[in-house]
Length: 240
Image (cartoon, rainbow, N blue to C red; front, side, top):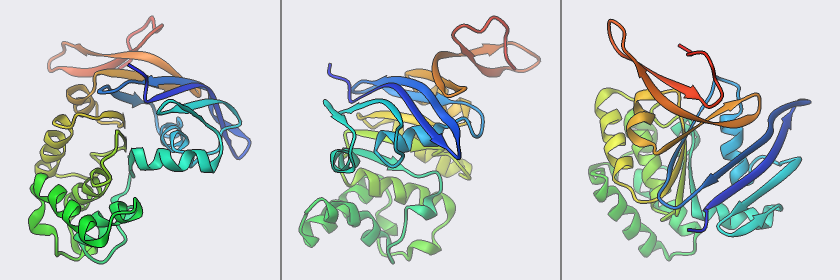
């Protein structure tokens, strides 16, 4: 299968510091790739680079079979790879839920009625139809997260890029989000500090260290209670 994304030797700097320093990855259809690393490691920068929101100094990004360098070349990538922001408030800006979810399809060229019908269909599929007429900024944090995801899914993307999707979710919305994502067929790259969530959702793990992506794996150590850890390929000592 042709990869959806192939990144080779990606270098991105900010303020004179190399945030990404030779990062490479491949995302294949149906794959759910977890990316882990400490705060400031460059995980969000990596996701933004994949859709052209961060400019690479060196390296290559091939998305959906084509090499992407310019803003014009990245524009169609953003229509095919849905990006869920770390903060839902950064993603929701229309007055009502139905307007917000329909915004993406409208931008893709659908007529207003078609866009509204698609938006409502996605909301119903996610069991969010009861929110369609609600004022967006009055939603709870968990509702905002799910509505933001609905807006991404309404564009019918081929891949999802999810930045800390479980941030500030209560148990109910956490389970809803996990159930929704687990049932989706498209490929995903998921950035998160939530290891149990990643363990249940992902098919492969990469760790971002010193600007590079290294193969990793989940590993559980028996203690008085279990702790789920991630071991990075090449590590000789267990990291807790």
